[in-house]
Length: 425
Image (cartoon, rainbow, N blue to C red; front, top):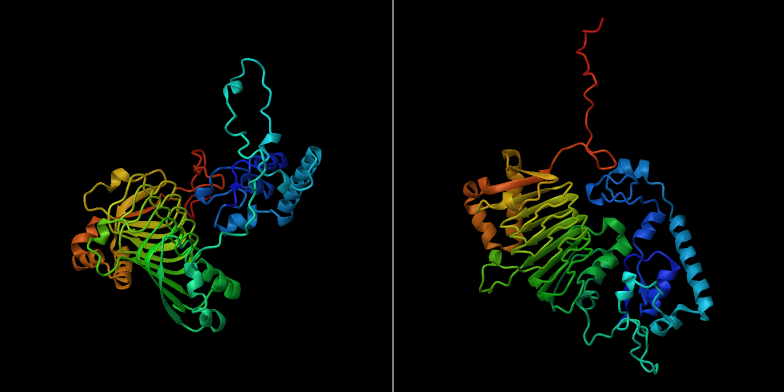
């Protein structure tokens, strides 16, 4: 395996220590953001980033963001220089030579009575292979799988679509060991056609079975992925277009809307596309959704968390803390037992009954959901529409003006109101 570590790594010394503990790769997050201008305002979810980084607002991006890619390059150059200097002090030429060399690390000496002296590092600094028989770093480029992945099975079949834009339809099976199914197809589309992708419905892949994590990740325009079965976490992660449809097999002996058929953290960071799920989802459904449209028949805790754009329709119950940190977009939730208000996080959103102007659009999405998934529950709702419509809540952001720091804008009392025209002397 390739061991990767992250979390607070900022300097060359941090990299050296991580390598000595056995890391092959090193993740940088906060420090690289700061190097390009982030001031750690910690309001990324409010869409009001004062440096124009974590926002979709064009006015903030254009007026506030002044970062240059050279700043990041400069930062990592300094990190690499410090790594080189420390390696030289230790008597080594390459980082690979010290990976897993815990024998070089020593606990820092602390004065008597210091609480840090209570910590025991023996397990962390134990040399598991003093004879140096087993490799201490990753030596294989990747694991050799005994069977081709889900994408490897279909890439050749979708080649006419990728090369000539011809419409293709593919049927295949999938297992829970098949991760990020559809991602390589999306990558090939993006490589050739950039963000615009292909025309609608150019590539349709019909999977049967249980999908592993990140099914449909980075799905893009021109793709339709249909899964007949169930899926693990991160369905539609980062999707920017296309469609993902998840439904149970026709011979399923259970009611889909009463059972979970996809996992947690669905649509994480999605910016576009549509997802239709004839069944329930796990926790953190549509977390950080930034533009996707989704219909699902129930969700767990923290639904629509940190959502900044898009539209979610929940045809069933939700868990607690719904819409926490949701700063934009809308959600419609069917509340049959009257418990939804107690599960909502009202800090940034409010709930209202669905008005006539929104009812047609909501019904249209449910009709599309039924058409594409064959959902029995969706059909039931449509057949009794007049009965179900009053049970829906619309969740929308509170329209409180915020400045670029995320604080509420208050009007000063001493500010005089504008006088009506013609009243001035």
